[in-house]
Length: 358
Image (cartoon, rainbow, N blue to C red; front, side):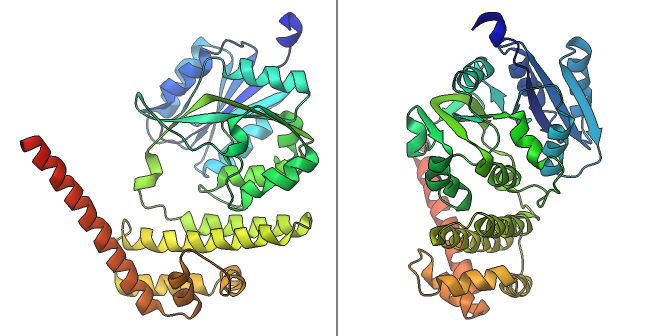
């Protein structure tokens, strides 16, 4: 496509918070893009480490980098700020401050967007821990090249934002037409950290007229970070996202399966939250019981339990105990499961040590 192809400007949004150990690599991967007509908007979300200092070095050497600093408001607001600040560009994509892009990321995705006049191009993601690459779960529709029109998207792919993984839910690994993201630039962020990407995608996907999926993995996602930490906004954020799901179901008059999958997802989130509180959070039984009572009284949790009580569910015992407010049994079962997991880890560790000794 030559010179005409190079006329399409892409903005890359990087939300950064205390990423001094990883952001240099992320920004270098952007700088190495084979497609050169881009601008990178880094939203420094109140970092207290050397993240800003590292970003400013890139700004000094390459005018395509821009840094915008704000008080810490969370990843969701930082990304929305990046969207709002994106001007004079036809397309927008995202790169997390601890991930990196394949050098042909923009070239490959932009080619599909321009060639097919697509509102959204989706590529697969490769998960990495350091230099080690992991086999990544790839949804069936993402294993092959495909072009999807609006009706197909709403029927087969939109359900991905209601608990069924037919399409990756995150913002990275995708290229968006700017006008698509501008639809939500002035909306309030309903979450602070968790489910921030899902909240944006669930609102804009119904406006996608054409989507292209490419099976190649052009985005490298770093494993680690929050998965081993206590995340205080986990339940609050996912409950807010569940509220948004309910709004979208009503707005677009979606069929019943969307409600059922959404209800299953929020009860699974509650189960994960209680595990997190009991484990990493080190809640006492009394504190855990108070938290279980608080979550049980939330209107949409109560409604989800009512909707699911007579349905098949893989955590049926938990569902029944939660529905019946049998918190003592819930805590006892939770502690027993934690003990079994910890014992299993110790046994595996002992076996590994014995192998080394031998």
